Every structure is written in structure tokens, then in C-alpha cells.
Length: 322
Image (cartoon, rainbow, N blue to C red; front, side, top):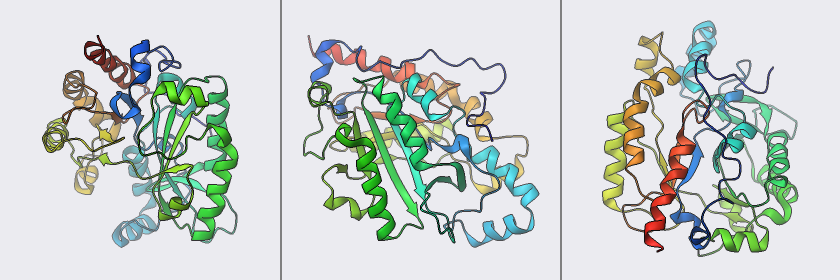
């Protein structure tokens, strides 16, 4: 199976931003990562969903029953609504993505040590083979910094967690930025040659100083741009969290909508709502104020110019550094 699905016909990919962090103006080198505008990829690995894999165990019993009885209907629906990205992870890196939402699991009844990514079903790509390609990319981009958010961990025992954490520490090595009370700046990261902040959303991470805690994600769970914007504005009114956090521009459709709209997909829904999301996004400001944003994650980061728009927001910070 191919490692990357092509972008929809007629959609031109945005320009690459493979080295955008190193090209930021020098005054921004001393701004904490939590005050920069950083592009993120929601469900970053869903371009590699394996339609022959089982549903993850956390899926509701009704979904599992329907999938067993009517797989010829449910599987195409999963692909249409479960695919949130069209570009592979290396392409996403080169386009400027610096935050990755990585949902990890061990398949039930699998005696191997392999871990996979998930979104309703499992991916055909394994976790470690994917992260090896990330390390290779980092080697050729020594001043770019990634935030990897590992979560979900379905089917993973304590023993599997410890084995996986050991593998992560071995793979990234000295590139891992150790957990700190204050979020580091680019200058401090560069001086220590740290390139990866690894968030691990499980209690097993507490005994490993190389791992960061869970990063809050503002998820609207809404099908329309109006619903997403209303939710994000409400969160902004409540005040941003301390430290790193994510604002999700991703849309979510419920089961009834997906079943009734047989010609729709998450891609077409996102396209229909993109103009409103784009206008709202361009009005946002990064920084440390209560209403500022930090990481902004979305779907289809290849076909849509999320990276360019988010990176451009950092120019607003220069007004406060003069």
C-alpha cells in the first residue's frame, strides 16, 4: 500500500516552510514556544489508515456490530470521515507542521511488539518506523523544533508503555528536551541542541524526566465553522492555559450526518467551511495574553494553507518587541 495518498485533484499544495523556525526574526528567538503561533496536525497519521484492520476496542458496541455485518458500507464511510490528512508526515514537516497529534495503540491479540497509530481503525504504518523518518528529517533541519503529542494508548499495558518509552528515548536521544517548569525558547533549545518536546499522556511518563505532560487541546466537537469559532471564542474568553496548548480548527460530524450524507466526506465538509475558519484564524494573535493562541491544529494541512497562515501570525509579536 502506498505510504501517501495524493491530495484531491485540482488542489495545489501550499509552499513549503521546512525551516520557518530558524528564519524567524531574532527578537522571537527569546519568546517561549507557548507564546509563538505554531501550526499543528490533527490526527496526523490518518493518511495511512488500514481498511483491513479491526476497529479499535473503544468503538461503541453498535459500531462494532454494524462493521461486522455491513463492512462494505462502514469501511468506505470510515475512510471518508476518518481520514483527516492527505500528506505523509515528512511532507507535513516540510510544509511547516511542528505539532503532531499521534494516537497510539497495540492491536488486540497481537503477540508482536509493534505499535500502530489509530483513528477508529489502525494504520498500516507502525509507530517506530514513522518516527525513524522524523528523526532523519530533523537531522537535516537542526534548528527546527517539534512537539509530539502521544496519547490514547489503547491496548497498552504498563510493560508495553515502559518498552515504548525506552524505544523513544533511544530513538530521539539527546534531541529530547527534558521536562521543565518554564516552556523553553528557541534560543535555549538551539543552545542545547534540543529538537523534540515529547508529550506523553499517561501516568507512566511521570518517572521519565524526558517526557512532558499532556498538552490541553481545545476540541469544539462541532460540524460547522460557526460552531467551532463560537467554541474557541468561548475558550478564549475563559483565558488561555499556562504553557503549551492547542486550538483545534478541525470539524467533527456525528454518525447520523455521516450516514445521511453519502456524497460528503470530512474533506468536502472542511472545504465548505474553510473560508470562515481562515478569516477567523487571520484575526488571531499569539503571545502571553489571556486571549492569545499558541498551537493551532487542523485537518488537511497539505491542501489547505494552514501553515502559512499560522506562521504569519508571529509577525504580530514583533509589534510588542520593538
